[in-house]
Image 1 (cartoon, rainbow, N blue to C red):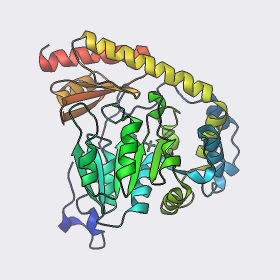
Image 2: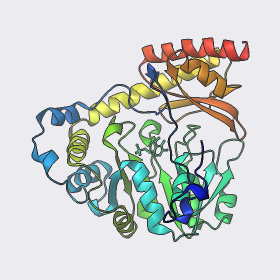
Image 3: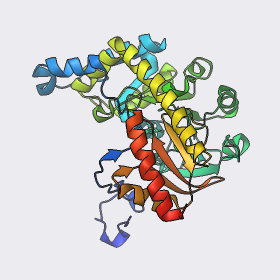
Image 4: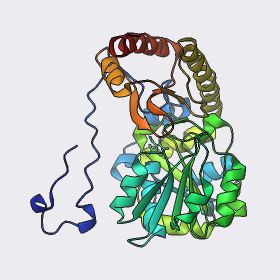
Amino acid sequence: MRTTTRDERLAVARAAYADVPLYDPKRSPVALDLTDNTNLWGVPPAAEQVLRTVTSPVITRYPSLYAGDLKQALGEWLGVTTDMLVTGCGSDDVLDSAMRAFCDPGDGVAASVPTFAMVPIFARMNDLVYTGITEKEDHTLDVPALLATGAKVIYVCTPNNPTGCVTPLATLREVASQHDGVLIVDEAYAEFAGVSAVALVHEFPRVLVVRTMSKAFGLAGLRIGYAIGHPALVAEVEKSRGPYKVTALGEQMATAAVRESMDWVQEHVALAVSLREQLADALRARGFAPLPSGANFVCVPVPNAVAVGQAMRARGVAVRPFPDLPHIGDALRFSVGPWTLLETCLAAFDAAHAEVNGA
Ligand code: PMP
């Protein structure tokens, strides 16, 4: 991706943005997109019902300031009070706002590598110093090295994107108990793992658990994320986030999903988990060694992953290639969806792998 040079930038542009490229992967549309780990089964029925019955004030008037109804529904579901919740325009917005809330320019953000690609970008956008600490060979966190960075914010994604590996609660507790700053636990895929760090927020006032309605809840297009933490921690993120970040339609649809469609969500989470294992078995049967995943995707080491990904794209199927991951090498990440889609994906993968790697 081309970065604008300093000379080409307007004199008024913020210095910290000089080396920040616009996030724009320029992905062309494709018949079957298995790149973004969204819910390929559709929209929770209660949310769809809201869409059918919505009246014009939902569009013409401003939304609620801080998504109070959605917080009420999320709080009842998660067993926390509404002052322990902050919402945002996707969990991207919550992560970005949290960094801004807790860090002054020049402060550090540390994360285990590999992890969610937006984290270093949000750090740079907020004029923070990002340090990536390579995970251990068994895909666990290098806790002493993360702590030794002295970063104000330590970010841990579990299940991790892109590996799918789950960090045990004991490890999160170890980090939280020794870290002076804020521990952000990104649980975008927690529903598929069946374990959550939400309980830690009652033990540690500086743990912020960030979650999303883009994955298990099938609402990625509405852009709704949230976080759970001690009221004083959450209040700072709320300030940093600002008002009106969740649309009125988004709030109503998400609230309905949480209140009335949890059965649908749980049913499709269970389906995704079982198909994830079926997909991993199919890859193992082909001689590959997919990483253990607690998410709705499977990460599998594949030689020349970028070229294989391109050859799959040429066949109408997109998966996400990751070149040269530490301890892993080249890998492909496959989102899990209905089995018919995964069969199409596997057929494209077989043909692409044969074409590129001569297997
Ligand atoms: N965290 C992780 C680990 C993700 O994979 C994603 C989306 N790819 C996000 C956060 C952001 O999701 P959203 O902004 O849609 O909530």
